[in-house]
Image 1 (spheres, helix red, strand yellow):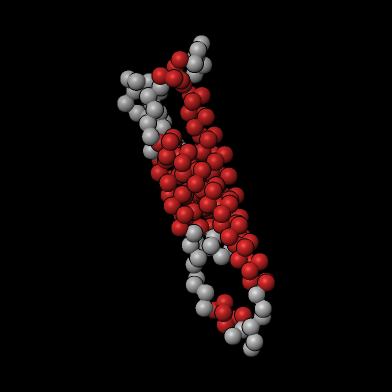
Image 2 (cartoon, rainbow, N blue to C red):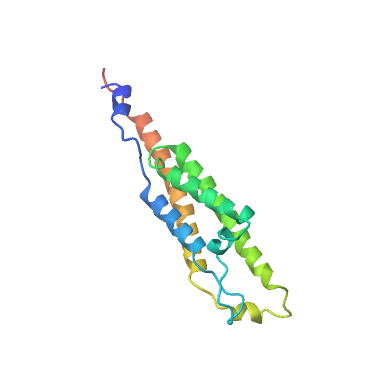
Length: 163
């Protein structure tokens, strides 16, 4: 069997389910409430709050772009080192932009004379889910790169098939 015949039998997608789940978990954490500016506030900081601003959310929407790139990369990351590396780039891009949005949210609270305010902020589950999702996205991206490399080494080491 020739290589062309073998390649034609490969599935169109080689989905890395772990990377896809990590991307969705990161998205959920980004959209969920992170914390409220005070215990009296009825609204929370979250990626959803920024995305639903009347002016469209601006640069905070970059996080959604990175997550979309990670989800698309996950569709081929089990077999393509390019897709796996794209997933890693998207994971780092998501990490940088999401944490920038969270940091900007903390900055809105304003300067305080002590750290007591930060310790007393009413936190929600969103930051925890975001952290877990980002960690898993980075880990699954690394795993996908290693898996693809090992598959390439195994294919190079196998004897050529007779025609």
